[in-house]
Length: 186
Image (tube, rainbow, N blue to C red):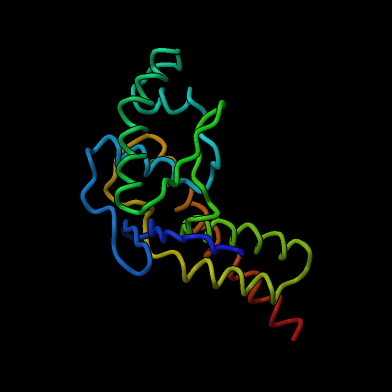
């Protein structure tokens, strides 16, 4: 018997919310550090965060055995327990190299936006103007505003800046060019 994946809906563009089976969840975080850590993992630009990058981002120190253990004991263990209580499952996957999210069980608007833009640019370069326009329109519709507005953190701020630039480029170049070329082909 094939059990369907549980999908956690995460909105990051314009506001931040997590819903599970149509119900808003994860509104009462254990602490601000746990929330910031989890939100840092939501970046669609990185699928795996190395232990060193996380330690440097959170505490400004390189990964050592001690800093990794501290991270695991104070933040990751707290988050795993929090999500297990809130959702009945843990969306964090820890590996030897680092940590990532279980994207088979998560729908992330920023990831869908990023993929639509990249696919649109690829289609545009291949001359598939109408299909590129569809991808760009989908990306534009997904972009509800700034990425995780108001949340601090290096990874979050860098992702916010990169996605805003991608959206500006999409609007300035991609949509205009795809619309023009699709109209010429019709």
